[in-house]
Amino acid sequence: MNEIYPVKMSGNFYLDPRLEDFCRYIGETAWSILLSQGYNVENLMTKFTEMWVQEHHKHSLMEQHVHGLGAQIVGVYFLETPENCSKLIFHDPKAAKVQIGLPEIDQNTISTESNMVSFNQELVKTSNPSSGLKLTILLAVDIVFWSISGKPI
Image (tube, rainbow, N blue to C red):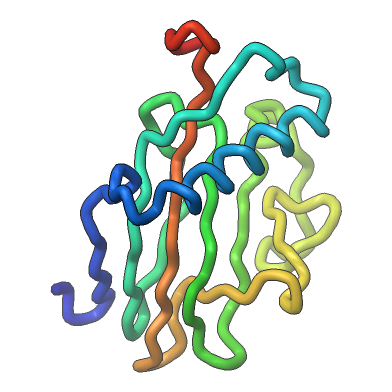
């Protein structure tokens, strides 16, 4: 384990039969979210590509990144976080925002003009990077949509 940014990651476990109901709930919720946002998912079904757990210790963090394998829904749920931990930040993925966005007054402050999105600390408690020697544990999932006939879209 890296001494300065220590992180442990489990293997992929979405096929564990003990998690069948849990995975069904996540998949149905992902489907409902996209339907409520106006996407035509009536003839589509969700399919997991990955589900894993990470333990972040010390100063561990997750840099801005994208998920592969065609992931259309990416989820994260924090199972354990230290008190007063830092916020979870999502970066605006639209290429136009990156290409022609105006400079921000303070790039470290999240605002309506920011390239970042965060959530109310009471709704989502997060930690990136971890605070000191305290432990942060998270569950992450990647989900793709397939046609009901069983083919990827």
